Length: 506
Image 1 (cartoon, helix red, strand yellow):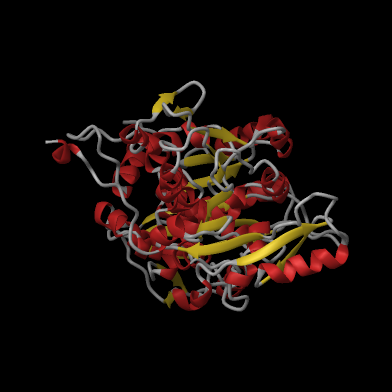
Image 2: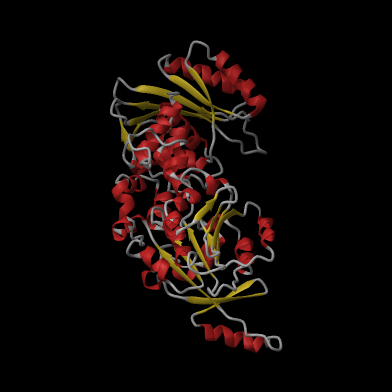
């Protein structure tokens, strides 16, 4: 009878199993989206916490909401720890066991927050999304990784690639520096380091480092020699997590649809790729045509600037992108207007362009935050009376906003009407984000958002970006969609539909 009530909890075969099996003092797991990182981290302390008196583990995220939001680390722990006798203490964000074992969830919001842990003894330290933490926080907490419970202290961490993070340098030996991809034959291989005068010294064998330290200085009388710390890296990606693909079969498709930069990071696990010219747009992605359909839904979106060009400056451009959408949700880039002018001439340009476009073309423009932006928006709406005008409070960084347009171009969904403006347009978009001026890119982003208001928060690119940043599907949706099964985890499609409903005011 008892056996029928028992359930076996085991890691997925492959990288997740190797992560839980490695003897390394420090193991970093992941390096791509969807590899089962958080569950692997949650499972790690279960080997000790219920049977070793005094065993303590601490999970760190950069901020408390990342722990406590629906679907975060705390909710994930509720799926496992009660089955092993854990008793939750919600206000303290702790799990406790009858034999004295404890697992705590905490934050390191500021660089100085590590000093709250002075004097602590933590047998297992877990960092979720290690690239979100500073090198100072990581190395300081190494000094708190100590134990008297009989378990040798160790550290486990997860992360996604970030070429500009200190973690990329820390893991450089495991990463091909030409391709940015993990070196397969080095997966799980142990290396060793010591820290000397805030510098990390590496070796393939601990004896090499011990020999170096013996030559530099002897240990204090009666003290033990310094022990090198072992490190390994175990990469994983969505293909290593068939359970996720069974529940969300569209997840892989969405990863594949990302712009090259994010696709390389989140699907391939590329640690070297950075935003660079040519990654977000190539002219060969878009067919140049001489005719367009007659029944397009058309918008004109303006990225506004208001400074004339002189010999002493290099101001931004005012750019108006005219974008049509057909009944099959294909996009047609019809016209681009660009000028450097003073506010009066910019207003005149908007009026003249609106008259040429006609009243069927909806007009949008970016509204700066603050009272000055509100006043300018009100003035332009009045000046363009008789036309449908939408001021837009733009949010998010330029790369994120341009992602959906880049995806549409890469998929072949954007066609461009031949015109004298084509070459300047191609030059600027192919140079994005390295060129000094990116006004065409901003205008394209705004035009696509004007056609798809929900895209501002719930485009495929944005969903995947936020998943990679450690958010859960529930957090992205804002709430789990109503389903017959109240325990159902929303799929990516659920999240997207919840976003549509949210922005449509349902």
